Image (tube, rainbow over all chains, first blue to last red; front, side, top):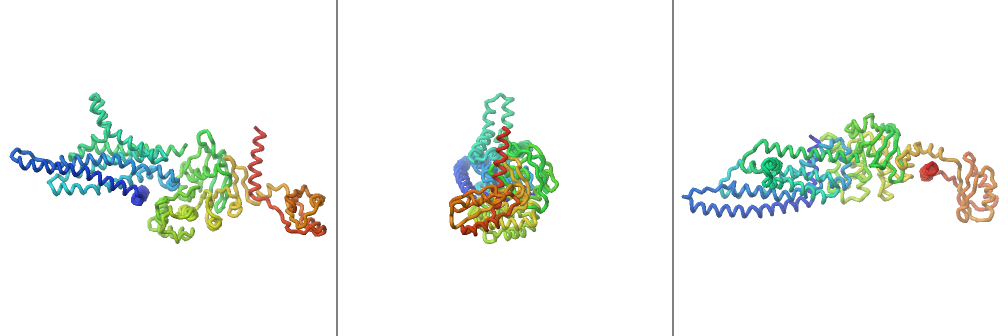
Length: 255
Length: 314
């Protein structure tokens, strides 16, 4: 455990030294805000109308109208951005021949994988934290429920954990960072859209496909429901993919 | 300290190391010598538990590289061919990170960093970014990284490669210094380096050991003749013939106008006779010296002899 944190700490440090992190974070915050503003404007316009027709009993929910869509949007933006953050994890070590430092140290390979994963997760969590200023606007303008906001953020973080795991896995496959990013993006996108196929498939297959889709497990979180089955899905997804990463790295030593 | 038995490593159909067996005792400084691609790095990677062997066993401090690799990693310091340095890190932060990786207790890390900075002469650059350092300093950081946990065994893969002559001398001195307290296995394809630093040499070619001995032993076993070099001021006809006329001379080669190489039987000492003859004939002695077989000669002889034998067999 100590080694995991030690590796994660260095790894996060190297993110903060690299320009990639700052460029990516700036772009992320810009696009995220750009998508948040229209949602907020729409909500305030609708609220104005609602006050005019108060007698009709329309009540608008800021959670549903602003927070939920902006969390979903954030997921989409991060889908594009995470491969750029994760692509270096193993590919760069191999390319710069620094991996032998970790491999010749008394640290288990699975701890190295876990350390790399945690570092990326920490960085993404930090980015999400930076972007969460948007919630303050909603708090200022309306009375959203705090519970669903927190659970929504938890859900997004868990889903990002899955993307990161896929990215770290992709990075273990190749020495080339661009290829790693491409594989990581394709895998993440595939796990995202698998739910779309569910809609057109037979009911039986559809349920299964829907269960595998990363997005379908996010919805309950944004509505304020923390279902253990969703948490278990995300966690087991992460562990499974990281285990695969470990196996890939281990088997590459034999070739 | 290090025991290797019948070690074989295949990369697909190609075998990098074939049936290698050797031993290194505590406190020895051993040179691992071979041309590029001879299997030096592969062997070192197996000893440091980075690669598993295809066949055979390797033990370090009594621990098996395959079964007890964590124990070995604690007692070994490794400098790979390309020093494993995170280019974007500051020197002392990087060393502190390597210390933590090697389980140096938190409280002792800064002392360990100070120690290796001092040992490797890195004090002046401790706050600089590794990527901006010269190759020589980077190599030293690599060496510092390998020594940070004060390992019993140091494995250094071509530690002086890519350095300028002054840096090479400094690194060699440092290794000699370290050899007093550590067991060192050092690879190189630069022969004089090994003659200077090591007590014992393992020569490897195409994945197989071709010789393993002390330097004197190698010299003695390889020497089938003794050679003298004579340089004269007054080139005259017939010098070669007259030298050949001396007793126990096998052959005399003329190299250029006034340089002669006299090959004699191994136990003959011809300096006096050659000198007397040169004085009598007034050739004017410029230089008269014994030619020792350099490691280069030994190396070439061993690796080419090996080939000839194989070609004959084929």
